[in-house]
Length: 67
Image 1 (cartoon, helix red, strand yellow):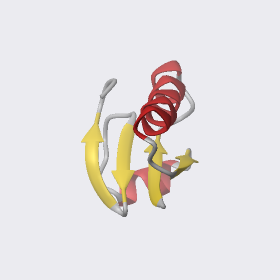
Image 2 (cartoon, helix red, strand yellow):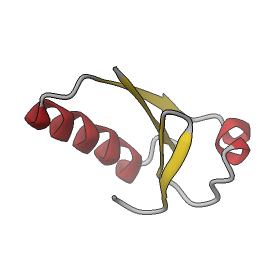
Image 3 (cartoon, helix red, strand yellow):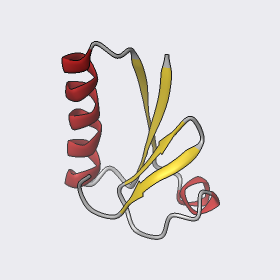
Image 4 (spheres, rainbow, N blue to C red):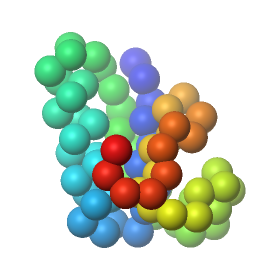
């Protein structure tokens, strides 16, 4: 199972990003665990300054805006 973190304050784009990831994973038949990270200290720990950020298996793959 892939672990995917969505980094952000809970803004509309952050929620939409999490929903998009879940939808695409279902379509592809991939099992994922989506974790929403809202703590700014944790987000900055990934070096993300613009949200939403997406982290897959502890690697930042996207930051800022909808993927």
